[in-house]
Length: 173
Image (cartoon, rainbow, N blue to C red; front, side, top):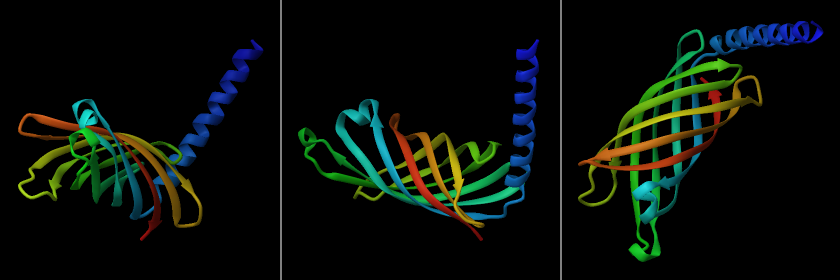
């Protein structure tokens, strides 16, 4: 009986803190984030490419309690493995989506858009990226964000996919 009471008390505290946290998240205004991007190619893309890296800007605009619409743009470059010539290829992904804060500073989200190749004769690909992340407040209007996502770029029946990590500083506007 004591264990049940203790578990109920802990669950109640968690629920109360989650409600308060969601209320705090809902009260924040628009944010802009500047981040470093790291991409770990998977599947066939991972067979020919090494680690990708770049940077991004991400804008968040609250539209409902715990829900932000997002817009992002950035640049990612990938280096081909030595056995495939070792050259680099770049892309500019531009996406829009949403983030839902499920607990204090913890979000799930997704974006859709396009990845524009910077190579001569390169293709534009349909981009999609579901992900999760956390924001650590560091000042009244700023937070450090650490996010992870699966991202796919599809063009002409070929998908280049990778696991993306983003380390960013978000500040209120």
